[in-house]
Structure formats: C-alpha cells, structure tokens
Image (cartoon, rainbow, N blue to C red):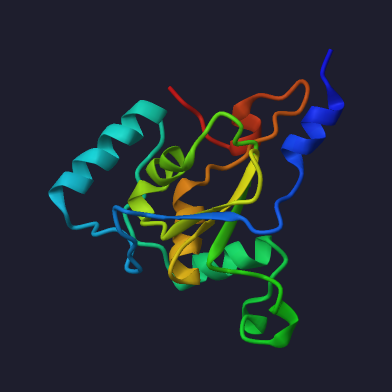
Amino acid sequence: MINTENRWIKLKRLKNPKVYENKAGAFITGLDLSCDVLEKKLQRRSERFGTEKKKEPVTQKEIDALYKSLGIEPENLNSCKLKNIRLEALHMRGLEEMDTNDIFAYFGDYGAASVEWINDCSCNVVWLDAATTARAMIGMSRPFIIKKKGTTKQAITGIVKK
C-alpha cells in the first residue's frame, strides 16, 4: 500500500526550485549542421530510432507553427498578455528516475543553460533564448499518430511501405 502522506510530501512544490547550471556550457546558436561528427551522430540516431533525419535547419515558420500549436499567437510574443509565460523554459514531468545529468544529456544537442528542479518529479529546463527552446522542442518531438479501430497505418498516413 502506498503511503499517501509521504507521497504528498515528496511531490509538494518547493518554494524555491533548486537550480543547476550546465557545466558543459550553454549556447544560443543551436546545432552546427555542417559538422561531420554531428552529421554521423544524427545518422546513427536516425537509424537507431527509425526516423528520417531532418535536412534543413528549423525555420521561423516552424517556430511560429509550434507556438500556435501551444495556443500562443506569434504576433503576441512581445505583448503583456504573455507576461507569465517563459518561452526560454520547457517544463517536464514524470522524472522520478532521472537526475540533472540525465536531463542535460537528453537535451545535449541543444545546449540547455540550466535545470530548475521544482520537486522530485518535475523541472524546468532553461535555455538562453526562446528560439533555442523552440528548436529543442521541434528537434526532439515526433508526430503522434492515432490509429483508429479497424484502420491501418496506411489509411491514416497515406504512406504505402513495400
């Protein structure tokens, strides 16, 4: 039986999150896609996870589409309507089995500046600017395909694999 009182104490939000800086260094410019070492690393990752490597860098149009998918209108980015939204931070939950080094390793290609631990289960990963955060979200995301009962993957995606 789970002791709910201890669980509540463990999950209780801290007044001041613990902040850990990235000792490996943070950067704003994102990935150097012309680097041969990075090219080989991305190719191995693509083969391992069965994904196709994206060839072009992230565009402003893709960043705007990301913001719209989150309910943020790109034209309102500088308005006071977004005063409580931190575009340079990404909130993560369900991290009971991860530590700070795991978080930095997960986002290693995107140079996170720091991790703010809120409690044992959630944290904010912070970059030096909003564009790098958006690049990380776009680069680490995968499409979510819902397979309806009685349909095939071909019917949903329109792709026929031989």
